[in-house]
Length: 65
Image (cartoon, rainbow, N blue to C red; front, side, top):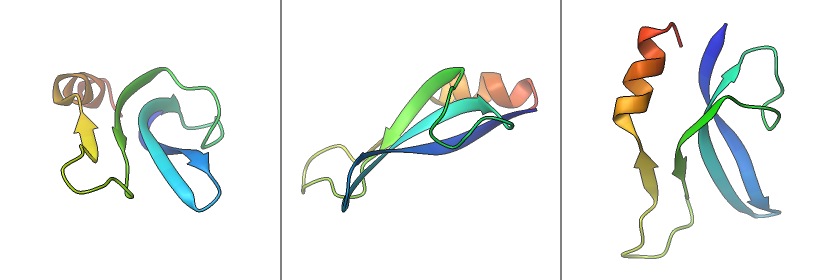
């Protein structure tokens, strides 16, 4: 089954997350099919903290994610 999930990146105490499409059997930070966005919870004021390609998310939801 294909799922859309957050994959953690960054360093200790400085999280950064990629929004990825992956097989549900793969690890959280393991192999993924496509990166559809990112989320930066520590973004400074005025910087972009969230970006998601909604057309790609819709595409994968149509396929069962």
